[in-house]
Amino acid sequence: MAAIYDHAMGYISKHAPTIAEQLVISNATTTKEALYGDLNLSALNWFERLWANYYIYMGNAILATGVMSFLLHEIVYFGRCIPWLIIDEIPFFHKWKLQPNKKITPAQIWKCTKVVLLTHFTCEAPLIWLFHPICCYFGMATYEVPFSPIWLMAAQIAFFFVFEDMFHYWAHRGLHWGPLYKHIHKLHHEFSAPIGLAAEYAHPLEVMILAQGTISGPFLYCLFRNDLHILTVYIWVTLRLFQAVDAHSGYDFPWSLRHFLPFWAGADHHDFHHMAFVNCYSTSFRWWDYSLGTDAKYHAYKDRVAKAKASERKAVQERELEQVEKDGQEAERRVESYGKAKKL
Ligand SMILES: [Zn+2]
Ligand SMILES: [Zn+2]
Image (cartoon, rainbow, N blue to C red; front, side, top):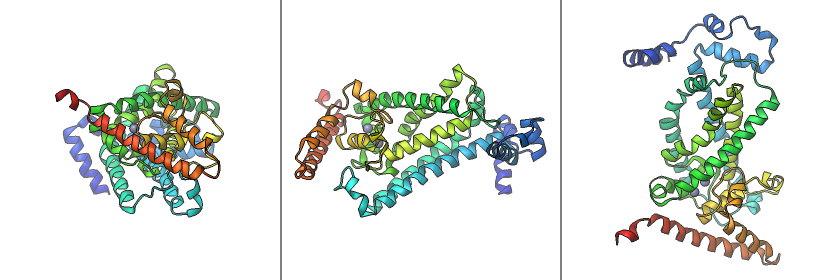
């Protein structure tokens, strides 16, 4: 490990000496003094002490933030996906499956895992090392303790949710425009009945574009206020990953959040997007689609199923699902043929 570090540092020192300077790992005493001065760490709570000790142990704030950010993403993303894979193997839960006749194959799961890991390691891992310097540039607290009060964290996270939902709605609609769809967003639509693991199954450019909705909210906030801590951002990213994975799970339980918060989109909403190709472009909330009428097909489908007699509901739903998917495939063909008619 030490040899790899020395080799990497030798290379960086030769080609980018200013970056190398910032990557040097200091010993614990020097780091403690540099980061915390004479702050009495024993007066803090256990989590704040753990946080400070982690930065002291790592001996370099850039590496500490980079490692923590990358691990957080991997652990939360895959940690949230695995239970959905298990649920899909238990017949008891199948009655709440949104597209009950669809079954994902092990080959599809493996392909999905490979693409997601490839994007994480090639596109995100290198960028995550820039996270700490960017946070410092915008004035976000990273190694600092104590953390923000709970009420402030909750208010900041609420803002990030609303901002991301707005950003995603418009960026996602943009990705459905012919040329962008064909070259970028099509990969994500390979699953007309998605699974949790497919949340980040997307072209690297799409991952980069849509990630802006998640990370630029906190940086935008920092332009107006200087009280944001990176821990709040980590909690936000965790909740956002839960939302994204769950929205692709393919299951709508009676206890799913959307039954208690009527404006919460949930899997019911996003699953319809994958099936119908049009409609339901937002992530967390329903208000953008509702206000702009981009959920008309979704509501019409829901109404038709709800109005069917209880004894016929299952058959009606199957028929409706088939029709919605057929219409979706047609809509996708139209978008993909963008520009072709003009050339003829
Ligand atoms: Zn889409
Ligand atoms: Zn999706």
